[in-house]
Length: 638
Image 1: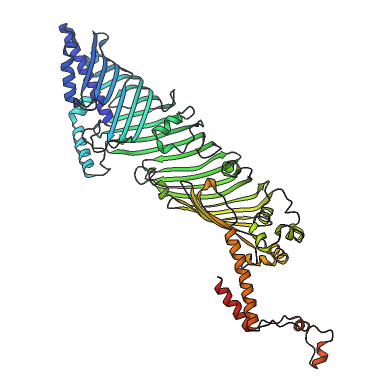
Image 2: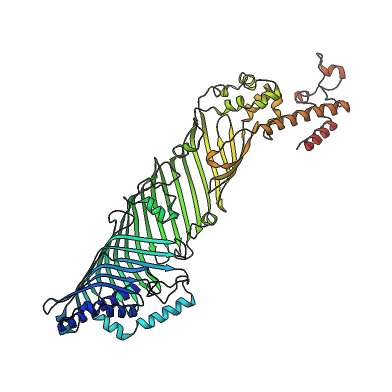
């Protein structure tokens, strides 16, 4: 509304200049002699310093009065030391219909033409807005000061005399060529938020303060050519200090955007890869929008992103064929069923933002299908290590306030991901474990790999010679909280082993991970039968467990290796425990009862009734003393 008011005032001022020109023309006096007076009066009226280079005019009763102003400049304020510009125009061309003024007392402007205007709007904390001197930039919406200013502004603007006077104004055609618009909102001494539109062409047909009028706008936003197109209908209501827009189409072409400059101006966009060209189009249709000096009152908008493509800085593949329909109101954004492709996979999502002007509470739900993960993690894997598999899963995200500062701390999410039929290429995990854990060979004095290989169960015989390691199932349960991805569990299951990992990964790539590898119980029993010294590695499920060395550092440099110290400790503890148990048993003269090996029938020597087969096969029980010693040693070596 302030823009329309200032625009209307400027038109009236130009009309006033035309009247002066008419008067001077009649008096045959050079109007430029009065230029200092005109500049002074405009400065006083606008409360901003005004400079005019030259004024030209022509006059005829048939064609009316034509006024041209060369190099019009309006500064941020009338302070002589403040040289910041608000508006600069190379040329203003105005034609006034004198016959309409004489006959009907209507103020009819045939055309207004502005060539290469430069508009600078600033809103700085603790400083007056350079467009609205009554309002400070750091007052939050709904504050007492703002309400008071709005009330005062409304009471001033609602003067019937002003409205009646301006209602007689009509402009047949307004045309602006090659304009530039800069909006800058920042605390003092900081870069802040900036919007820059260049190569602006703007036009209005049949501008009136009583009836709707049509307009169009074409502009370039971070491109060398115009990529924004807006057109529709508008109407201004001075009594209510409102402007209404209907059926506004707004299209933005993304291809050709200068991403390097965009990221420089908006650091919060640095997650984008500046070397990948954006593609697609944003299409908006505003059914109705009403704005006033109090802000946005009504908004009903349908939009969509069509055939979008972008690439994140840390990913090797772009997102493509993005289709995202959404609805926008004066308070909320609703994203309906949306899709995009990433390599051969597909992502579906929907979301919502409540109160996007203040709280910005948002939720997002993602579903992922058949995404080839190996294409995105190859750069983080050790050289020569290849992993293949496709990702499926769901992720639910919520948070508030899109400001980059501390945003990760405000995000809460949970996800369930899985990979089916994945494979580690050119890598035999079991063979590596048996060959590389040299501490086992040192402890047992045996070549474990050679010892257990010959006694492998039949179903594992071919595993040691297999080239790859197939993973039957890989799953991850995780959540995001306090700026970290908390990994509750990563479970990988193959025929010959299973891996468990847990820990966390930060948004800065720092991480902590720990876990272990287990072998199936039948394979574990076979190995411990061949090498009894390895019984110390059995867990409560009678599976051999190899703990992994805890990792702390950059997740992109992760190294997960067997923890040889823990493995050696477990083996030593089990061996010492067995030795102590034997020594204590010998000292206390505790012997395990052995079944008597007689060739004769034991029933004949005792004269007792024959025992059942189950009784004959029953194993002797451990003495109570031996069980007590074993329990005591278990407690000692826990």
